[in-house]
Amino acid sequence: MNWLQLEFETNQTQAEELSELLGEFGAVSVSLTASSDEPLFDTQGQDENLEEEQGKDNNKKLWQKTRVIALLHPDSDLDIILVCLCDRIGAENIYQHKITSLEDKDWVTEFKVEHQPLYFSNRVCISPSWCDQPENNIPTLILDPGLAFGTGAHPTTALCIEWFSENDISNKVVIDYGCGSGILAMVAALLGARKVYAVDIDKEALQAAKDNIDRNRLTEIIVVEHVDECTLPVADILIANILMNPLKELASKFSKLTRTEGDIILSGLLHVQAKECLETYSASFNMDEPVFDSEWTRLHGIKK
Image 1 (cartoon, rainbow, N blue to C red):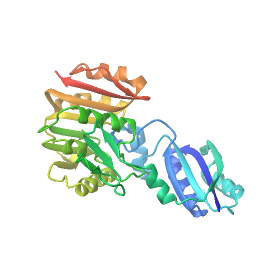
Image 2 (cartoon, rainbow, N blue to C red):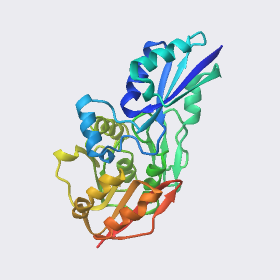
Image 3 (cartoon, one colour):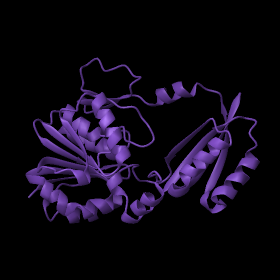
Image 4 (tube, rainbow, N blue to C red):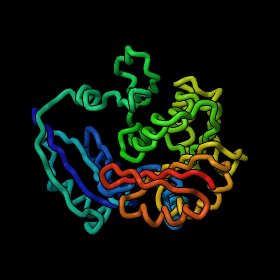
């Protein structure tokens, strides 16, 4: 039996409603993926207007442009479904759509095959729970992929993990500002950090981080708190994988939270944003040249 895949591009405001409507119209599964270039759930990276809107309607934070992909039975009447969707959420909110016929597969197995362990400088491994653990004693985090939080595959996260894996962070105090899933905090703990403070403004992110940290038995090293409800120490290393505007707004705060000659690592930036962010942080930090991965950037500096 062949399945029908119905794919839409919409905006972050309508994506969840569109997903729910597809479920009502008989979709076997619905997934949301990025259709624009920004990390998901980098909660400090949302601008103030967006946070305000999402606070009012309690919508989840999604990409500015979100791709909604639904799997439907082959006898589904797509013409009627499309008309109903356009009527319910507005044709102007569906930028484009595509219909594809898919052969039947074991979709669970297919998903698991696509998500395999990630290795960084042969010093740390990020592995889904269904994979065999490395036999070479590489420190390993168990982290299953999901919609909302990072697992190391996105270039911004990978760039940060690479910095940790290429530097000695033994016995250091680390702040992971905008922690999301807690992945960077956990990598720091695995690689020898003495204490790690994982903070965020999103309750779902904080709960995900707590669950992941508990699962990986790192609760004695990592403190997880809402950023407005904790007192942070001056850290040896501050890492923030968020977005351009909040990075600029937080520059003064980050300077105060980083000890003299301490390290700051910034990501969540597009290639074209590196220069502007470097200029902002050069007032308090001796900044290195940017490191790029595709269109994404990582910055590093030493506190003056």
